Amino acid sequence: MNHDNRPGFLFVLPWGIKAVGGVNEVVLNLYDEIYKGGKYRPLILVNEWNCVKPVRKLVDNREIIYLRLRSPYSANYTFLRLLIYFLFFPYRAYNLLKIFKLYNVRVVNPHYPELPIFCFCLLRKLKIFKGKFIISIHGTDIRSLEGFAGLRKVLWRSLLKSSHGVVACSQALKNEAISILGLEEKCFFVVHNGVNDSLLKSAIENEDYRFYYQLEGTKYILNVGTFEYKKGQDNLISAFHILSGKFPEFKLVLVGRRTEYLDELIKMSEKLALNDKVIFFTDIPHSYINQFFQFAQFFVLPSRIEPFGIVLLEAGLFKLPVIASKVGGVSEIITDGINGKLVRPGNIDELCEQMEYFCMNGSSVGLLGLNLYENVRKHFSWGQAYRQYMKLFT
Image 1 (tube, helix red, strand yellow):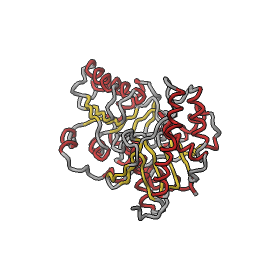
Image 2 (cartoon, one colour):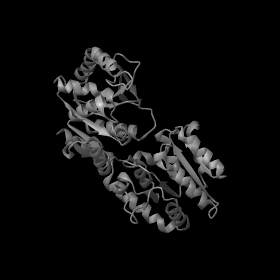
Image 3 (cartoon, one colour):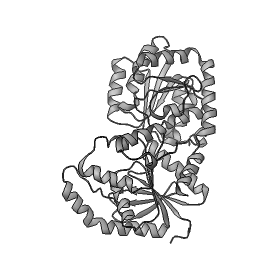
Image 4 (tube, helix red, strand yellow):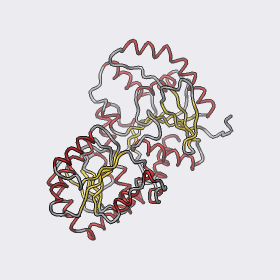
């Protein structure tokens, strides 16, 4: 029985909360800030196909509700899927209304939106749900809609227009979304992501995730990010290959979520005879990621596309000097020559040149890391992000 009378704040995720990635870090940290704020009761709804009825669980002391949410669109069976969707919609609406009533839900906030959240759009249009409906975008979710047409376009535009606003994690992503979606600027808001001081604390002792003994005493350059083309790890390996001849004592540590692209990166490093120089760590839970920042010489983010770059904030917490591509929201964190160095995306020579300078001038580039630390502590906390979200609802 529910004894908490606070209005409910319902996050919606298309996957489980244990998934490794930046979207989950955003949701989990905002959840914790809302809980501490005391005004709302945070909940997370996970789209789980096996749960035709709502299933509530406590995961890491957070309230999670699992429920199947269908998409109204299929590329292969367009009208059949739409028919099935509306046939099952009353039952889905019934389950959602039970959640709304039980938890007094006043705000629904899907992150990384996909068409299964269209049910909230219908509930708004039918005036069944009268609370706030805010959609948060993270980059790839919106980029995948470029050039969409037909029924899919109609559904997406209807979904986005039914919301009270769309939140982007950077001004750069907001501008990109306006261009792709063709919506008015007044529909969009910018709330920068934050970083949590708890990252500075020692990782939980767990033999499966203790890596510092492999890295302590080793000079290494660090990159953290999903293994995918847009993150530019191939360019980083190419630049490091040039660099390693001059600085054989340095290694390159790449930490990220495993994808098929990882195999290409491993083959690339083997082809360049960097087997013992490039070290890959995959699918590391975020609570253990601090080990890698702790002993790194400096951090490199050579992305081709980067909506924001939470890892830059994390590097800043550890006062690491940073080299990053001048793309997307990176320039909203890094000011070239002040708290980091910016390079043109895809320019391997420029990237190598800056990496060489960082290797040769460790003490002087340390000031960049200190300046980044001050910038992060002043402007990029989850508490600030929480307060900006609250303004949207009041």
